[in-house]
Image (cartoon, rainbow, N blue to C red; front, side, top):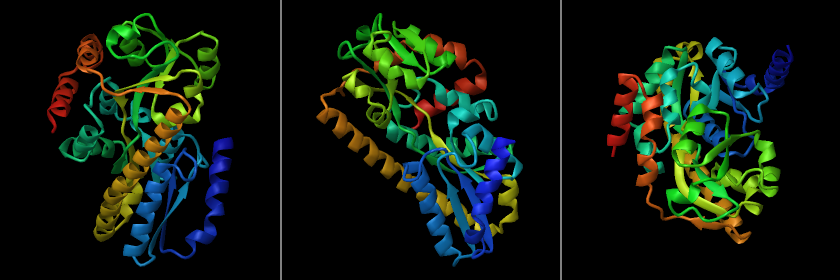
Length: 323
């Protein structure tokens, strides 16, 4: 009831905005205003507004005004909300193929991830979403997660041995850490700073902006850029909303969404660079050049456990073969 009340209030607040447009689409994001994903959708909205001469407007609701990701995904499926920006991880139970993208070291680097998502594999994943009443419009960048700790630089896999590393509550992450010789310690994100500070854990893993904004760089100064996980973000539209658009408007929306990907990715890269500069200035030590192959090789039992179907194994092979 509380979620419904919040959603209705937020939608009513947009009435004056909608009055000037023939079609008003409402898009949800859990991130705050100014965040790269929010600004990416805003860029898409601006292009659509311009190309339709004011006929189609998109109003972006940041900061979880319409609910958390899982709630807003369901509302988008039902057509209550027109669009949603969410992480692949949130779709694991809705579109099972997305689970493959939670496997460690699946992508060689960020450029490889972009090439995969912008190519035939991205289109294939999009088709799976349509079966769940969602139309994928764009793939965004959610950054790469890497290890950081308070004990020593991680220059090789052996340096992780015996470390207690905080991970999200996810079986893949727990098994990843075991395969690397470390101990996974699931705990709420808000407890990580004090846990490192008091020695309950030795470190954690995340991207540069999170490492910076959380203050974790203050208590865990060794950051190793191993990029073990890159989970794409996406913008999807309710199929019910999509089907109400003319073919011409659908093409405009698709093109604007693709263009917004470049904007969002550039903003994310800038945010990462700014965070990296701040943590280095504060005394963090960044390990950049490591041989990832031993880390990748150690993931064999993880892939055997979680990429069990022929379809998942084939997808992994095709992702790795993408140039």
